[in-house]
Length: 163
View 1 (tube, helix red, strand yellow):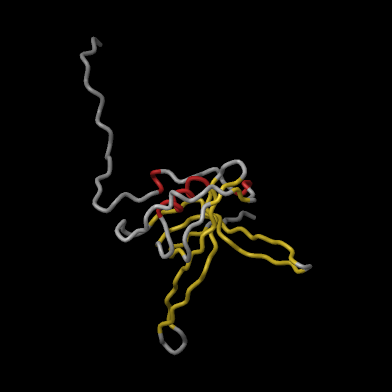
View 2 (spheres, helix red, strand yellow; view 1 turned 180 degrees about the horizontal axis):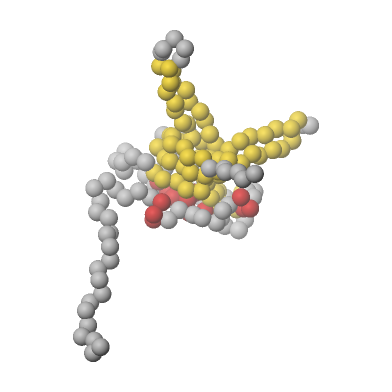
């Protein structure tokens, strides 16, 4: 039977982004995302429910998040679910998290925090095998509102060809 593991979340960061680097120099960060849901309860009253999700970002996506995002920043994350399991003091533990493969910043540029470019490189013990190899590109970042898209390329100049 086929399976499908895809998650799309829109929420706000619960803490500032702290970037780390693996021994091979690959950037990684684990961010907390608060996703709000509003629904009516049995008595007809609106109830707001918040779900907190841990998201791991890799490579250039992690670097972009570290440079431009801070606590409270709204982001859209697309990725896949991953179940981590470990044992502590003889008890088995597990935690479900999202491995973010695509991240898009949401909202305006005004009010954003100053870039965090001065953060030091720290080695971390992360498993690079879960990194899909895809990192953020310019296509992953939404253009500013009102910005013109490049449009189609201009046709090549017409030459006087003898045939």
